[in-house]
Length: 277
Length: 277
Image (cartoon, rainbow over the protein chains, first blue to last red):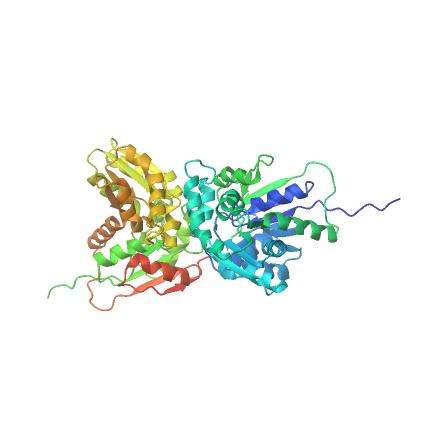
């Protein structure tokens, strides 16, 4: 009799400062359709992008402990700032594998660039941390990186101006202000270093033109998660009702309303508030 | 011998979710130049405007207790969201007088309006709380209020786009989108219901025209603080070096850099990080 493959239907744990990580969740659920997922959005402390390493790491530890209590088999740090600031600490201190968005995005960009000039956009925290640059330089020190923080992008996405006909022009004007210096630097790949930014992908592509490839970390990290789970024989192959659980640290209402824009129509978000302080 | 007037050189305590309350501090220090002040910016949790009543109140209680430990003689809630959500609770539970920005701003607007049509702009939290409307209706139920949340204003101020020649046009376009419905409603007074907004005053005045009076809560609340301290004989009349102390819950650097824009050149901000969790 063939030995039954070890399966594990414990959930994948994903966390972010708020909504943005839902783009990562969406990619993971598409790639691994049988997986159970528990998502934590730290909406009481959002945004992380303007906060310090110490403070963000304090939040990240509390959330990771909460996820482990909930029996996750892997933790995905679906937030660029938390990945930049806290991934090393979490990897050393948590008893399950911990994956961040930055490594995956950086490696995808290295594959995409031909002229070895990569642009990186993100929140102030991610940009100041140089996390993408460090990751890229580890593999190819000749690649040149050009950085730009875009603090207005997150509120633009959350306001829903991106999809609004009358406001599209302003969104493009703002994107143009942020991106024109990067275009001048002759980059041929641009990393969206913030999980909110995939919702601005069309606008950004319009502004930078078709010659520059956009690298979206959400898809890249989903592939890395699959690889790690395969290696450890932890992929769920059980057919049946997969479960998605959403937890937040503040009022779930706003998270649910805006969140549905991030995950598409197939997933219906219903979130529970939990206390982690 | 004439009895010496009771004086009190204990500090005035002011708090906000971050930087915005510095406009209130600036008004207070101008009106009462002898007062010592301790300012707390909750930069680890900023912004409050998108968070729930329960969460904001939890933060406000911790900060108020910290200020009382530091011997403040009065607490000024220099944050519209925290005033809207937490003022009643703090008034009942703190052993010193607690003053919020909303009452002062609302009453100033009542004095200014002639056609009894008032516009109110602020963060989502402040607008959804209806705090200004409730305060206004208490005194004159015939006044009509028109509300608009402006979530992009705070990042625009913090990005410094307001003062930037090349970006002024976009700031005006955004202000126009938010304000055009209020203008149509024929308001003759507009309350800046967020402590960041005084830095946008010129832009807003340009967009709404000179017929609509702008009501800035910062000045109004300073007068209320003075009145309360006078009534309780708690004004400081001691000449000498007044002390300004700035505390934050996250890395002080950003607070110091941007903060100096809020308080003018006379005050030099040097902040200390304190733990209140």
